[in-house]
Length: 358
Ligand SMILES: [Zn+2]
Ligand SMILES: [Zn+2]
Image (tube, rainbow, N blue to C red; front, side, top):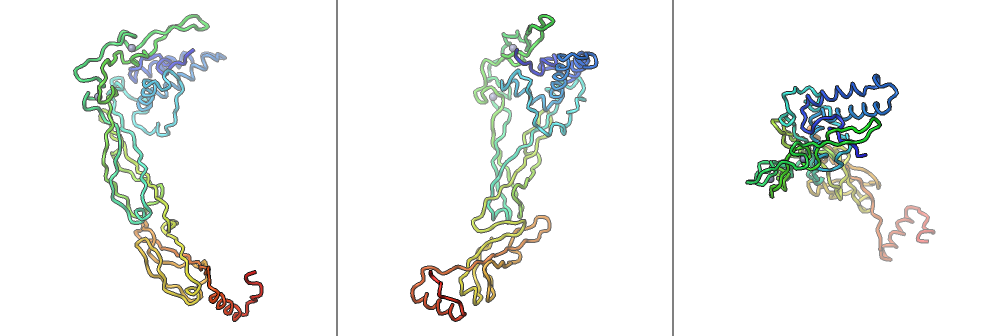
């Protein structure tokens, strides 16, 4: 037996008002209530299904999503409802308190939030960035005014359901055949079909448009930061407010610098002589090469600090430091003469040179 869809379970039409959904739910909930049907597994199952169906259909937003799934044919007719949207409870009008006068097609529906993942360079994360992103979103088709019907043509009544949008389905039950109404599969409960779909939108009534949105990334932005741009999400319907756009920032790795909070770290190799005598060396910074002094007798692994050369702290407005970790390069490919000098040097320090080079 095919699974029923949520409308069939609640025994309402696909275009039933919120009031009708509620009324039918109350009737069925009473009918199948476990207290009134002790030890009746079938009734208990129905009670649960009715409750689940009502949870979805009483929430205009969830109902819209379900309609989209049902009428697009994705899993159509099934009661499996993937209820993974954690935001379902925060929407206004989700409490089923709408009056019967408010048909759902007229109810304001807030637009969905959108997410855009933006990858920026390490330098841009440090100093901030003004850029523009191009965002694809759906918009009402301008050719057919969102009707999905090619201009100059008309919709026609659905032959399968005689324009009613529903069909009778008879199934056998332990108590004999039972007839219920189901949403017409041909017209998806609309009662009319579109013989000539709009060529621009393929009959969907929606087209994809591109928005150019200026984006200002503040200095010091960190990996995974979310910037909210109000009102640039999907448009609302029937006077609902548009959603917000969330820009999620991703920072590319840098070949030289590593970031730790607002501090940055890089490594710099120095020669043995520089380590011994001390020197003024050149180190990379986010703003190009800079001079740095190392003292005589610098050991490998020593970390030096360049104040204020790190990342801006967006809260305090202060700038972090840069840390430079030095390591001493071991000379390679020495000539015999150089090796001789180094050997003499080692001996002068009293080093046991008998095993060197073995
Ligand atoms: Zn169109
Ligand atoms: Zn039909």
